[in-house]
Image 1: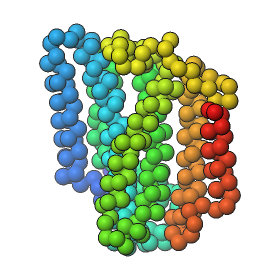
Image 2: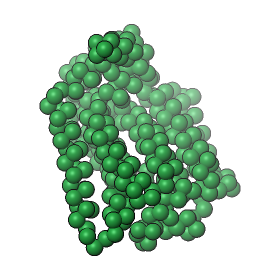
Image 3: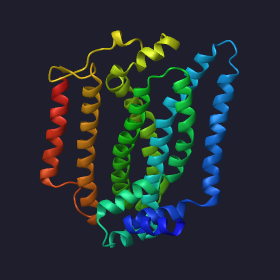
Length: 299
């Protein structure tokens, strides 16, 4: 059965199979599992020992803490792995070898995206059951949990696409200056201090506002986010987008899908021809039109 699965995986995406074989070593898997389990155990012990708090509040504190931790870990670690991997591939000369593959560029890049951050995926996947259990125990809205993981996947796909683009752009320069790790650390820092806070700010203000998460959090922390009645209306071309769950999610997902599609147009262009410009003329027009419509709508 294992060999059949490996053959199917190799037929579907050889690059993903290559990444799996290179990264899923017993020592690496053990390290990821141990770090995840220890982190969860420390959080559990910390909140379980708060005897001055009601049991439900302890569950709520645990659920909310994990809610904040997972995107930071996923986005930061995944971005670092992707940028570092592309820089190392360029340094070893294997990136040009991969470019010669007859496989479509999208398939190769998708294999990179799915395969390179395998260890962060594993560590986070192990934390999901505790997060869901704590959330349900504390009465966290079920639709919020579903939305949370949907947005985590959509946001991760967008940001990892951007990380690959940055990695392709920085790989040649990193070799020239001889500092392959600097580019990865810089991008991970940008992710940690800029992207992740923006991700939460947007979702708390818009995407999750109609789902009752702010009101749920206010039960345990009145100073945190406030109730839904205090949510500031966010309008786009006169339409309030954070009052309806369908509208808030639809707007967020459509914007992410368009932005990701534009990034992938640049990725495919740059991957096969690293010496060319990042985007063609019509791609630059499309990006400008998209950004102008997005910004003007909020004006």
